[in-house]
Image (cartoon, rainbow, N blue to C red; front, side, top):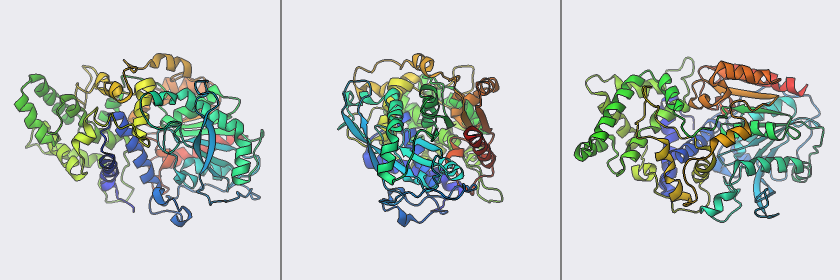
Length: 529
């Protein structure tokens, strides 16, 4: 069902609130963001401009939203043998560990294939789904699908290890998580590409070979994977298209907060409220602190750090997943709606912030303890917890902790929201072997950070995306250097946010996405020539 823009954010967050309640597991900030990204992508793909949902008997994914239609390739396309329909899932025997800890033991890694537009010899678009389950929605919607359709290509969707159903272990206890590394994930994709001709032939009856050019695609973390595949496996991957890729790995990502502040016209009022709240927390007056926890609807939270951290979700998600109202629409703007709470001059900013948060929690049916207690749920080691997998990756390799900016920078989150607080539950979740902060400097040296030294890569970013501060679009000089490496293209969208070019609907290309898509297709065609 299509939701208008004023209900968009609440609807997506309601999905997440329901998910948390069902699994009854609290999630650190990184875990909640992984779940939100999944819900947001599915919302944008699953809407009223849909193909026949009867084609997909696995109705968990629901109908798919038709994306922008680009010109079809030349006739004489190859025909995919549809054994189980377009949405048939296949399973590739993948090594549990590519670096000999488990020898040649394998697990089943989910694969989807769309070869309906494939012209023999055409490009192969490989989309690893990153920190979300592989969704068949992308088989007939989204930018990788559109590119494949426009260039006579084949689209292959690959599920990341430890997400969806692609688990190499029987549970998610700390020792069992050790095979979840970015090195293993990248080698998964490379290993599949080397063995794809036989697998694709057996699965859908289509022939691919050395003449096919492979293009890695992805958004957010999977956008990183696309760039890193081009860097580490240039013999396998001819080009890459990366949307909103935060290539600079950081444990103290305070710049996120600054982008949120630039996007919100009420940022100063929010900052004033946060400064007042921090003074109250610093005072040690437990009665006063308790009264404000009640005002925010968060009195069930015992930890002051968890209380402060709970206040970041609504602000961050409004900006990170922002969609402006359609032209000619009477729908209110989500940012304007949020800021309207701070237009009430009869209250101090902190009271306005409390009223907004309390309404947000109530309207979304959020259980504060389940949603915001940082270490609750640590003992739940059952499979199928995508947020737990992403949290492990942040604990061990990426960080990406969205901390409060240091003074004198303006901040919209409490000074209690630190990288130490966000990483502290890592031991409770995964064991005492995980200590301190991950060594992101070593990983940046290995993978290149903002200067990966690659060619034939399309970098796309919305400048309203807080994650753009870790991307090649973070600074014009950084973008220029990357374009000098050879045939790289950097595309920015001034009004767009996180991964909007990757999965926005055809009816919402009125804020720079349509222009970006034309440039993406032009760049791909140039690469292929």
